[in-house]
Length: 86
View 1 (cartoon, rainbow, N blue to C red):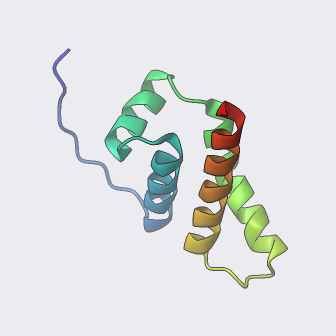
View 2: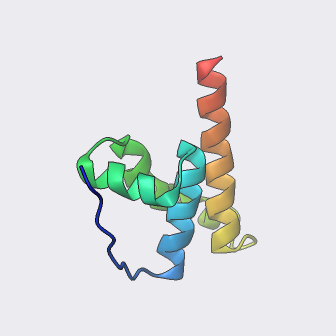
């Protein structure tokens, strides 16, 4: 199936979330977007990701930036995924 190029405008926060999630999934951001739109991703991870990042921010009483919280959550998810496959 031939692919079409589209333009997508999103916030910096959402871009950081996409980047972190793509890193966790081990794929390029564009592939994550394609799989998400086609329903081939793990919806629980994507649905709970932003809420989990907000929970981390609350738990640290604002001592982390939003980007640091997103990165921390992605590192934890990646670590948990790696340990579940070994």
